[in-house]
Each structure stands twice: as structure tokens, then as C-alpha cells.
Amino acid sequence: VALCEAEAAPPARSGPGVVEPRFNWKLFWQFLRPHLLVLGAAIVLALGAALVNVQIPLLLGQLVEIVAKYTRDHVGSFLTESRNLSTHLLILYGLQGLLTFGYLALLSRIGEHMAADMRRALFSNLLRQDIAFFDAKKTGQLVSRLTTDVQEFKSSFKLAISQGLRSCTQVAGCLVSLSMLSTRLTLLLMVATPALMGAGTLMGSALRKLSRQCQEQVARATGVADEALGNVRTVRAFAMEQREEERYAAELGGSRCKAEELGRGIALFQGLSSIAFNCMVLGTLFIGGSLVAGQQLTGGDLMSFLVASQTVQRSMANLSVLFGQVVRGLSAGTRVFEYMTLSPCIPLSGGHCIPKEHLRGAITFHNVSFSYPCRPGLQVLRDFTLTLPPGKIVALVGQSGGGKTTVASLLERFYDPTAGMVTLDGQDLRALDPSWLRGQVIGFISQEPVLFGTTVMENIRFGKPGASDEEVYAAAREANAHEFITSFPEGYNTVVGERGATLSGGQKQRLALARALIKQPSVLILDEATSALDSESERLVQEALDRASAGRTVLVIAHRLSTVRGAHQIVVMAHGRVCEVSWGPGSRSGGWHGFGHGHRGTGGSAEPCEGL
Ligand code: ADP
Ligand code: MG
Image 1: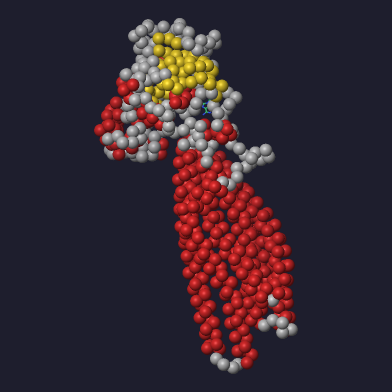
Image 2: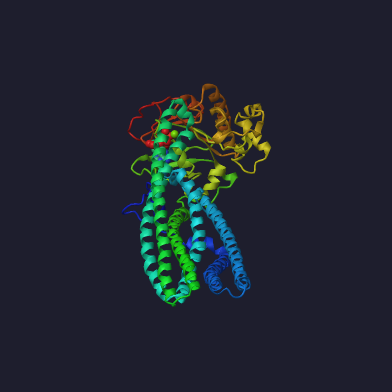
């Protein structure tokens, strides 16, 4: 529970007092374990490649020695003397290429497998989170954890193994051969290299900071474009194209400036480091040359030394770049694993089900109080008590923002009440299986139904995955949708567009109704299902709703009287409580008393029902 509460708080920003989540090594190990064998093979190949790389400078030195001897003495055949060495070198080059191919291919296999596993695990855990979790998070953020963060983690993992292993081995191996070639030169190198590396690292961290700022600025520009393109109808309707263009251009200009600055920084870094490297070569040649002149070193050894020291320097430069990449990868990995271990307060399944033949569909809210987890200061429901008798239609009316949708959400168990309880046939909802409750007992039609971007057929079948085509047609007929669907040239195979954008409001609503009816729910919740419709679509939807309501426990949420004319009971809510109950015209047990003359509700508050 503590976990859930921590998560429900407004999105935590890194700052003083906030505990940064740590990288979850245990979870990482679980993803890595299936690939240990392949990883072992990759490591062996990478080590092999590095060792071959250490050999190469030594052989090159020997070759130079032969060249020098030949230029000096002009005796013997250069070709015969160098042939062995050259063949040896060629074999080593070939071997190195082969080993490099091998370990890179293996690593990329491991990386891709792990990335796919991680994405699957993260997606499945995200889908399981409480609705309260999604209230507090932006979809874009969640999606970027699935894509960018996993990608970043994967590439730094691959790089850490390939480059890291290789560079470390090469540094160690080359240092050994360097000190065997000349201790004095090695000592000099050991003084100069760390100083240069230190300067390089300082510059590098400044560049990394700049690069982060640059990325943030690019993200801001992308955000502007995303919002404008995603809401193009609103932009068009307000003739705001010009202003959006300017907004985008401003952000783009900022990101261009930053990127240019970064480019200049990188250019300066490259320029300075090329001077530094060249000076190192010159210094080694100069000092080494004086050693050669003093007969303390052969020319070939000097050549070997030069190549090996270049290898050391290149490897160390790689390691410093790698360090930054690994830091970034670890923080990406932390973000990925963070949501993988989060467990929801309301599980998706578990608990018991009421057998179909015993299910009556009586629902009671017992003194329910509720505030949304992301807005704990606002109490939406206070001591709310309401009974939905089985097979009857109850209309719930009240001001906008009064908490009607919240009542429906509690019934769907999107949230649990802060106090009190909701029961189905006398059993606490918390003891029942949520997926059975949502999947088979309750049909929910919201004010703005959302369809998926597939065919009409698939959208209706979403309510009951195994349904036959006949069941789909029957549900569509019941929802008054069959006629308009068959009037489309493609019929049930019509693709409805993103979120159902190619359908009218009334058509969408009727498809949503068919989708809910196909599961033959015992309880139907209609949340202002017709309030956004014109009168003709409202009539069609209302007709279908009336038909669908027969024999079911129905909660009709409305702010219009026309919607509630068939109700057995009309409940008025205000200030989070039931403040009035009247018997509606649909009721056989009592006459129509109209608003303001009914019985006092069980919630029995003294507050007047205003604003209706
Ligand atoms: P109604 O359906 O009667 O118009 P709602 O139940 O949607 O009212 O909202 C009741 C109150 O709860 C409003 O003040 C609203 O701002 C708030 N609210 C609704 N949904 C959420 C949510 N997901 N998170 C936080 N507050 C919410
Ligand atoms: Mg509402």
C-alpha cells in the first residue's frame, strides 16, 4: 500500500529530499540469465579479439626492423624475409575481423532478446496498474519508457560489454608489452596520458551537459509539433496555424542555437585532442629517437611502441566515452525497471465469482466516502449511500462535477472507496474477482466512447473476445447499429479510423452499446450516454437503451430529464451525497412526484439540492 501511495503522489521530480530510485540489479539479472551461455561465448570472442590486437603492434615492429635492416645492409631478399611475418600479420588481421564479427553478432542477439523481453514485461505491468496511476502520468512518458529508454539501455549494455571489455584488455595488454619494450618510455607515457585524459574528461562532461540541454530543447520543439498536429482540428477551427508555426519556429531556433554550440564544442574538443595526440607521437619519437641513437632501443621497438601507445590512447578515450554512455544507460534502465516492479493496489483478477444462476445484480453503496488519490484534498463523495435494486432502472442526476462519473468508476472498481463499501448481491466488491466483474457483470457506456482503430466487427467483439459473427450481429441489432453498419460499403469490415474518428457521435455511441451488450451484462451503467447527441441520434440511442435496460440493473447518469423518463427511481446528488430520492414515472410502485417533492434520500442531508 505504501508503494501505491508513493506512486499516487504527483510525479516525483529529482530534487533534494526525493529518493532517486536505484538500478534494480536483481531484475536485470533475471533478464540476463537466459543468455548467460551466449554472453560467455561473446566475452571469450571479445577477449580473443583484444589479445590479437595486442599482438599486432609487436609484429609490425618486427616488420619495420626487417625493412630497416634491408635499407641499411641491402643483403638477402626482403620478400623472403618478410613473407613469414606478413602472412602471420594477415592471418591475425583475418582472425581479428572474424572474432569481432562473432562477438558483435552474439551481443546484438542478446541485446535484442533482452530488449524485447523487457518491453513485453514493462507493457504487461503497465497495463496492470491502477487507474489512479494513469491519472498521475502522461501517456507520452510511459510510451517513451517502452521505446527510448529500453533502446538506450540496450545499446549501452552492448557497448559496455564489447567496447569496455575490449578496451580494458587492450590497455592492460599493451601496457605490458610497452613496459617490456622500454620501461623509461612507458613511465613517461604514464605521466602524460592521465593528465591529458583528465583534461579531456572535464571537457567531455561539459559537452555532455550541453548535449542534455540540447536534447531537452529538441523535446520541447517536438512537443509543440506533436500537440499541434495531434489537435489539428482545434488549431484549424481557431485559425491558429500562424501562431503554432511561430511557436514551433521559436523552439526550433532555440534548439538550433544549442546544437550549434554543441557542434562548436565538439569541434574544439576534436581539434585539441588531435593536437594532443600528435604531440604525444612527436614526443615519443623524439625521446625514443634519442634512446635509439644511444643504442638503448632498436628502431623496430620504437615502431612497436608507437603503435601500441596509440592503441592504449584510443582505448582509454573509448573508455571515457563509454563511461558517460553507461551512466546514461543505467539511468534509462532504472526508469524501465521502476515500473516493472510496481504492483497495483487493485489486482486485475483473483477473488471469487458469483455463479450466473445466483447473480441477481443488486448493488448498494454503504456510506461511501471517496477522494481521488491524485487529489487527496478534494472529497468527491461523502457518506454516499445508494441502492440499485435488481432489474430496476435508477437515474442519478446532479450538477456537473458533482461526482456522478465517480460513482460509476467505483462500481467498475477503477478505484476503491476511501471509507465505506460497495456491494454486489451483499458481497463486498473487494472480495470479488475484478476481471469477472468488469468482463461479465457490468456493461459500461461512457459519455465519450473510445473505439479502437480496427474494423466495426473487431470493435464490437472487444466486449467478448470469443464471440461468433452471429453474436456480433445480434448485439449490433440490439444496439440499433446493424442498419447503419450494413449501409457502409464495407459493412462490418469498415475500419473506423483512429479512436473511431470516421464515425458520427451517435454511431460511435451505438457501437459502444453493442460492444457492452455482447457480453450480456447483468448491470448496465450509462454515463450521460446521450447528452452529447443531437435529437435524432439521441432517439435512436435512447430506443436501444430502453430495450437493453429491460431486465437489467441499470444506473443511468444524466443531467437531462428526457434521459430519465423510463427510470423507476430518480436519485439526486449534491455535495457528494444523495440528497433526494423520487419514484420515477417508470416505477410501478409509486407515482411520479417530480423533483423537490420526493422522499428524503437515505444519505439524508440537510443541504438543499441546488443548481438543477
Ligand atoms: P460528474 O460526472 O458528476 O460531472 P465527476 O465524477 O466526473 O463529476 O467529478 C467529480 C469531481 O472529481 C470533480 O471535481 C472532478 O474535478 C474530480 N475528478 C474527476 N475525475 C478525477 C480524476 N481522475 N482525478 C482527480 N479528480 C477527478
Ligand atoms: Mg461525468
